[in-house]
Image 1 (cartoon, one colour):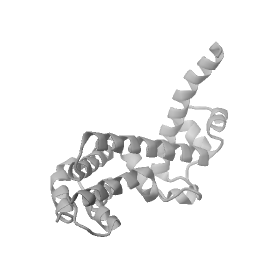
Image 2 (cartoon, rainbow, N blue to C red):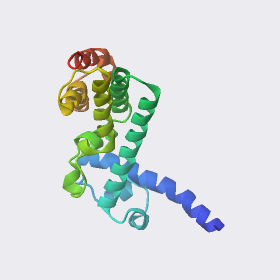
Image 3 (cartoon, rainbow, N blue to C red):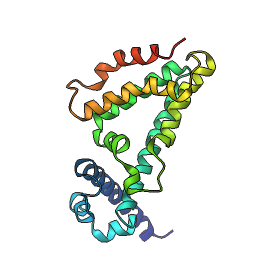
Length: 198
């Protein structure tokens, strides 16, 4: 590997991160279809040529952004599974993580949960089929196997545990809830867990 290759890699990482960060904000503020490559160029300060070199087109940016955020969430949920043994603790920690992420990076949550990804990535599976959502369902299913969660249709159990929290995230992002989501954590968790315990 020569020095020029090293320099190119050093430059490319920040450029791609700048593009993804700018695209995330633009896609969530004005929508995917209302965002153009020139908009992303202006917001990211990365040249048009570089954007096409690294991503090929706007869909390539959206796909890269989606994949990186899914991978990030998957890693976070895997860390939760490694830290906690019970379904109770895993599910509560997952909701706490989603609430904190909503407060710290609302654009990430808007893009992941409420963008209609299949409109601009038609071959993409629905977000609820992505690995992080599968992990959430597996957390509840493991609780059912251990007797922490009563026997019921697994998807119903997962919806009962996480559905209220996801709705609160939407209400917070829509400006309906004034208080930060962590202030609602204990209350929503008690409601969610009581709905599935034996």
